[in-house]
Image 1 (cartoon, rainbow, N blue to C red):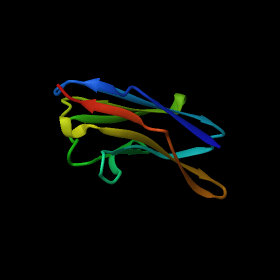
Image 2: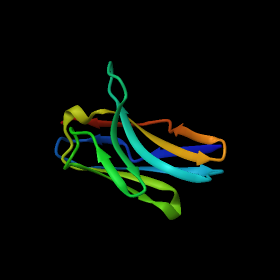
Image 3: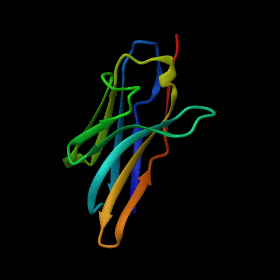
Length: 118
């Protein structure tokens, strides 16, 4: 079983920065991908950024402002968020996809609130 612990959310003014962390623990065999999703009130959960074997993908709305990275030794993913906008306000969730001999499995964190407001 894999557990994900997110941290780093909070309240920030427009134009500010935050860095989210997602630490994976437990019986991890092989991480295929780690990513960040977000869900704003009344909206569906959407992909923000994904990192697969060093290759990154971003939602158009965050390109040039957000950077996803991963520390393989620590099984931790990060999301550096710069130039934050009020529309970035959401609960941010970490997702990990693990490969095992029985197939691939996805795990989610509990979410961390990011609020961008003056």
